Image (cartoon, rainbow, N blue to C red; front, side):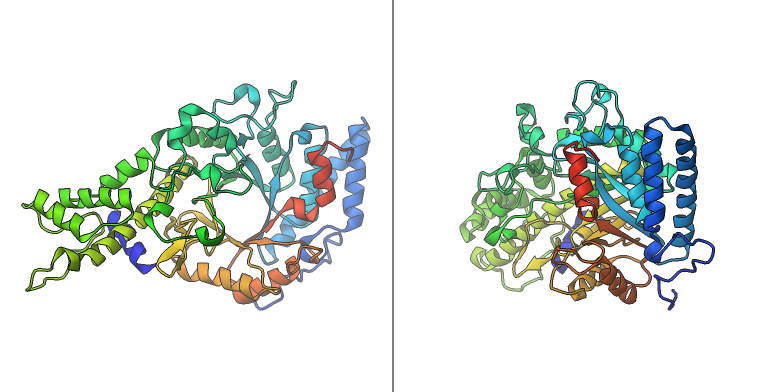
Length: 488
């Protein structure tokens, strides 16, 4: 781990009071965890239903109650840990029905949330109107008559009316199956040294990871981000900033053919890291065979006798030896250094792509964040987690949304994941843990959100924002109704 981190650098040079207690003397409708009472929530929904039937008095009363509830939750959150509590949300085509978005956003506020992350690019679809979608991906809304509906813009507006900050949550290096169906984009699909593209190593067949060095993939993604930013969300989160997660023995990348280095753009960028012809020749041989031999080293020495040691970015000159080493003696170190270069190059592609993706966001003064697995950057023996997610090198200017989804029957492993991220983050980095589960625990097999939050606050009181995955977990019946356009 330390070795590749060095190579990457060389390549590119609170209060003790319970957080869940809040004075309710002036806000009797707000209960623990900044939730609104069930009575208040039911009254608001009944007024919404009546207003949708044309009752003007109900419409006015509903709007008044929306403002009142927004104020109550915001005041509670300002005095309660965490100051920001967010939830992850996927919208469906059925959410264009009258009142559907209002119901979703109202339920989020009722549960004491003041931020929502709206999924706007996933599974190779984008949440843009079909009639004004200049991207290569199809719109999520494709039904006749809905061509001009801007569901993302509506979600942002209706969320803000309720005091919610609304972020756009986007897949990043996972471009989706639809992208792989275009022959003109085939060179942009990540490929390993086993002749596999990323489409064929993920179980569900819906995920397609791209070559982050490919200029066409970069242009396609940048255009989409620019379109999302035009809707002026309160922030943008980049998810799947990594390579595919594989199963079994393939979950560890231990040889160069396991890496996603076998596309033209990635290889050309890797070849440019060579600092002399000996280095370039050995990099080519290493990629081609998966190893180099003493004979390879001897061969490049003869081909380029005017050069010294094979060199590439990040490689240190071997220590001086008064006795010249044979090619066989030099082989183990050169092969190890070539392996480390290959890993660092793959990881640098991830870092470069997230910088490219976030640039249109930060240039507009909108917060940007990265979503990652705490274990996605780990080394295992002489290999690395197949996701090759170097999150500890992500810019500290971005929000770090760490998915603390560990499962061990209690909260200890969840807390440990967050601690690891805090320990590796530079001072000033905003770490925002994402917790998976439901209030009360339910049937998820995970500790309740209450217990996770309490453990996290005791362990890391300096954290000021937490998110919960997801709306569909907290409201499974309502989520299913929305997904299949059932009467709500």
